[in-house]
Length: 495
Ligand code: MSP
Image (tube, rainbow, N blue to C red; front, side, top):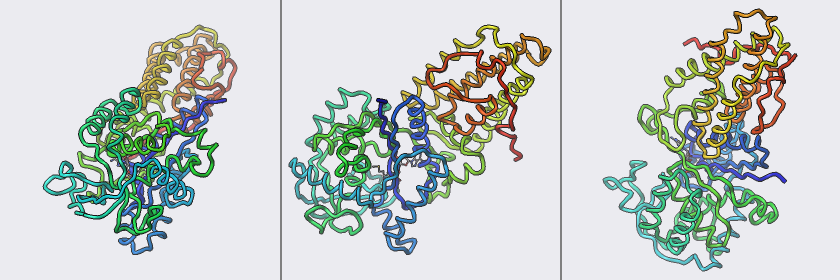
C-alpha cells in the first residue's frame, strides 16, 4: 500500500477575497502535494474557510448582507480562486458545514470528559483582528501591535481550557520530536512562549451570536480558534467516519504562516493531548512578505490579487516567482519589478531559450544517441539535492537546483556548438540528444512547481514516460524520437 500524505493549509477568514499572501501558503502546499503524488504517496490535500469569526460578521455588516449569505458567497469566491489558480486540493472544508459543527461538539464533550474545561471569569483584552486574547505584552501604546487598533476590554464569565496543564507534556514532545515545529527559530520561539507564558485560555464568548454554541450552554459561543483548529480532524471523518479518521490522522504537515504558530504549536497539540489523539507530524511556518517594505493589507491599498497577477503573467510564472524570490521560512519583499526581471532573465532567456534552441536542433532528427554520458552525474546530484530540499520544505533551494541544470545545458551548447556541425554528423545528433535528455529531467523537476510549462516541454520532447524520483539518465530514449519545437514558452513582454 502506498504511503499516505495528509497536508493542510490554514483555513482563511472570509472577511475579504484572497490576496497574494494567502495564495503563497496555498500554492506552497500545492507544490508539496504534487511532489508527494509524484513520489507515489496517497495524498490528501485539505483547504477551507474559517467562517465562525467575528471578523466575518463585521464584514457582512459592511456589505449589508445577512452573515449566512455573506459567508456563503465569500466561501464560493475562495474556492473559485483556488480552482482558477490550479490548486489540486482534495477537499474544501467550511466551518459552517454540519460535518464540522458535529465534530466540534463531540470534541468539546470529550475535552470536558477529560476534566480540562472549567468555568471562570475572563478579564482582559480581545483583538477581533487577531481573534485572540491579548496581554499587556502584546500591546504598543495600548493598541494591538499588529492591527494598530484598540482591543476590546472585556470581563465576562466563560468556559476555560486548562492549557497550562500541558506545559510539561508539550515541552517534552517538542524536545523529543525536533521535526514537529520548523524552522528551528520558530521552534525556539514557541518553546520560550510555552515555558514563560502558557496560561489557561477562555474558549467561549458570552456576547457573540454568530458561531457554534457551547454544547450544553447555548448562552455561550465557542471561541473561534477552538472551533477552527478542529477542521483538520473534522475534514477527515472525526465524529462521522472512524475508519477514514484512523487512516488519515495524524496530519503529515500543517503549513502555516508565522503569525499563527502559537495556535498550531501550543493550543492545538494541547487540545489533541487532552483527548489522547496523536499530534500532527510537522508544523512548518513560513515567513511573511511585504510590498515596498510595507505589510500587505487592504488599508494600505497594496493588496495584490493572485488571480489578476496570474492572468497577466501566467499561473506558472507566479508559482515560479513566489518560491524563487523569497527563501521559504524567511520574510521577504514582493515586487513586480523583480517579477519582470526574473521573467526576462530566468524564464524567457533561461528556460524558454534553452528549450527553443534544443528542440529546434532536435527537429532535424536524432538518429544517433550513443556517445556516452556528458551530464548524468551532475543531473543525478542535482536531483538528489532537489528531493532533499523539498523534504526539508525549501522550495527555493529545489528551484535553484533546476536552474543549475539549465546553466549546465547552456554551458554544453556553448562548449560544443552543435549548430556548427552537419545535421548528419553523429557527433551533433549525440550532443542534441544529451540536451534533450537534460530537458526531459528538467521537465520532471518542474512538474510540482510549473505543471503547465512541464507539460509543454514534454509535448515538444514527444512524451513523458518514467516516474519521479527514479529517473535514470538514458539518452537512448531519444534515439529516433520525433522532437518538435513548439511556441515560445515565455514570450517577451512588451512593457
Ligand atoms: N483563520 C485563521 C487560520 C485558522 S487555521 C485553523 C487565519 N486566517 S487568515 O485569513 O488571517 O490567514 C492567515 C494566513 O494567511 C497566514 O498564516 C499565512 O498563511 C497567510 N498570509 C496572510 N498574509 C500573508 C503575507 N503577507 N505573507 C505570507 N503569508 C500570508 O489566521
